[in-house]
Image 1 (cartoon, rainbow, N blue to C red):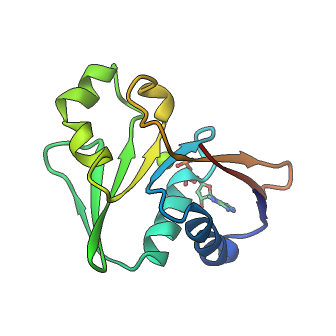
Image 2: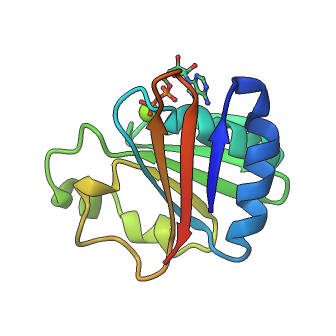
Length: 138
Ligand code: ADP
Ligand code: MG
């Protein structure tokens, strides 16, 4: 599925569409350059999922935890990860296999730890600053 986002005001509708498309898939991998809009889109997804609280984990700056309706959402940013051992040390499995939504920026940093099934979201910035979102189930 490919969606063009012309302005930030379209994000809630696009987030709703992507969540519906994902269905039972809770692992979302985000690909795209710095500044593409990964974090912005993740925030739109969280809002759509009814996030009421945001807590930055004091121990691991890599993961942020959000409380959404009855469950949790985990948001990872692996940009600053030096190696995959850091993800092992933070107990990534507890999060990835918890059944909660896991939104992962920079999955390229953890090539060997990617679960077998996931939703892949690629964000590209077009010449006019609009965004092209490509969403694919794996
Ligand atoms: P990333 O997490 O991919 O590095 P950010 O989400 O931090 O990128 O976004 C970088 C900038 O791009 C922000 O200033 C944000 O407002 C802008 N931006 C993000 N998504 C869009 C969009 N769909 N349309 C226009 N601007 C956007
Ligand atoms: Mg980001």
